[in-house]
Image 1 (tube, rainbow, N blue to C red):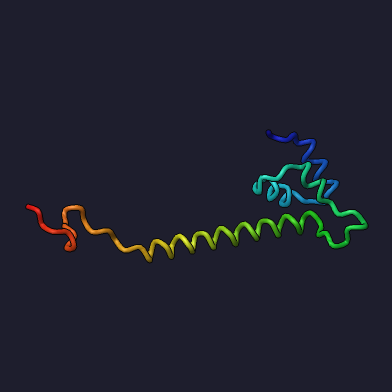
Image 2: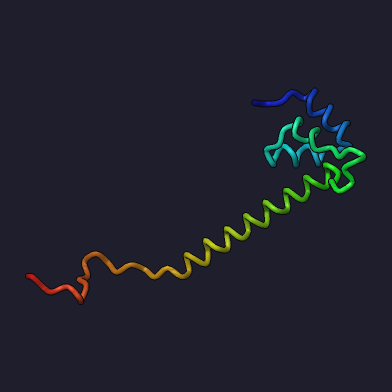
Length: 96
């Protein structure tokens, strides 16, 4: 469901975000309502501002993506090529 520009503007002002942060949130698949819910209240001093939270999410996703890519490359490098189909397995008796 695409969210209206009005909701994004409201989230931008309420969360004190810039255009770059809004684009980052859209790339990450977040919606303006989730951004507004994560604004820290004065009693939530442990909670990071929304802009910092967005950057952390993006960094974590990039890190996971890089790790997944490295695992795939490593798995591909460790694979041994399968013998051609016309070659007979020496363990099998020759029935011809």
